[in-house]
Image 1 (spheres, one colour):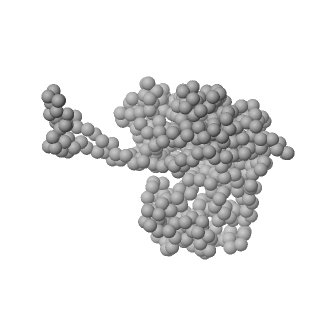
Image 2 (cartoon, helix red, strand yellow):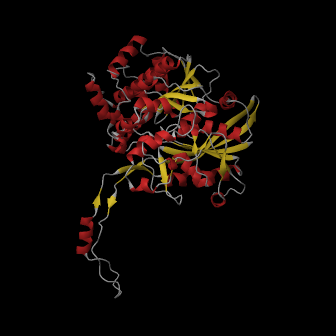
Image 3 (tube, one colour):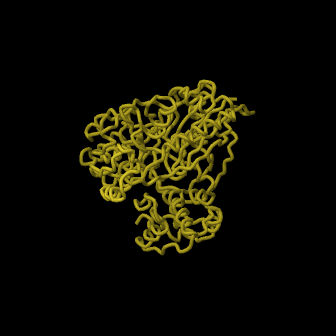
Length: 532
């Protein structure tokens, strides 16, 4: 038995999961056990500009250490100003959660065969010349990138940028974040930019790199060569020294530093392996597919809907449809579209809870299943649904804008969200098939959305394809599979890894056209309303 620690960081929580590779009657399989979970979320903090000169307080020469007078303090406070608040990630809290998780994993298994880290994409920490973090990474939902895409396209036209990087236009892409940061003190002092999983890996090992699957989400990686598009960065005024050396998934990053290893109680050398550090890349590894004609929905805070291809699709039609070509494990391409995902539901529940309204999700899902289907549908990928805020009010506004009656009750709101997500999945799968020429016979749903039976049923009906739901911890499973192969515990192709990962999974299959589901004509009519 070999045990690996998978660090899997999501937008609402982080977790450290121990994955054991054990022998079974049909061959090796992976058993997962969560050893630590910790919350994650944005923190909004204002910037404070202190006065250039402050009133001097009483002299301390006479031993008076009481500080400035009330008048002086008031003057200093009046002179200080604050700027617009910025949305940050608390990355130090995440690092502590990782260390606590490694400590718990060590207590449980004794000796680990490795550690791998995956997380969300695009966000990064800036390091100074001493390798010190200059500040918490800015959250991708922060408004600093508003309007930046247009500024970038004035220098590097959108069609040219897509032909090189194959990346869909999202306001939070790393390239837009770095351009938005130009002129700031932090970027002026920065000597390296590390994406979140790479930053944590560097803190563990002292080795700063950019793992390729996550680097492909920056808008600065050539989609064909999988090397940095240094000329693009240079044209945009981005210091190319910020871009660290690239590493493929499935290789040794380094060993956990002795002081850190001692702190977590691990008494043997502890390797850190590169994995698909973009959590979707790891989740796609765990898709229990047995043939290539599948689509996937990695369903969590975000939903990533797409196909696994051998080469990127860099056509103008693909760009117009805003599909992305991101690097996958073993040289594959994750050809997909970002869908707003369960974020809209999560924010809705948060708003209701803060307002003191009952918001028990299982009860709401059961009630939503009884609401007539497709009564109100919206385009959940509209920019209005990206930032935090009052999602029920935004849903109502979107409904009115498209000539529909807004949902009135909590179950109707939940049904509106799930119907709208299923419509978005339907459109994304259909477009992916048309743009790539790849036939699709089944949709695999992985991630937390697997637990949402109503959403899985709606996805099968909307796409007209069977849905296979599972595993729930797709990113962690894929993380462990890649580590185990890198460590020599497993071997073989991506298909071989998937076969190992599928053993023992509790998969559930949903067929289109189930009881109470709409017909094809209803889905088509609803799509016309939502995307009007």
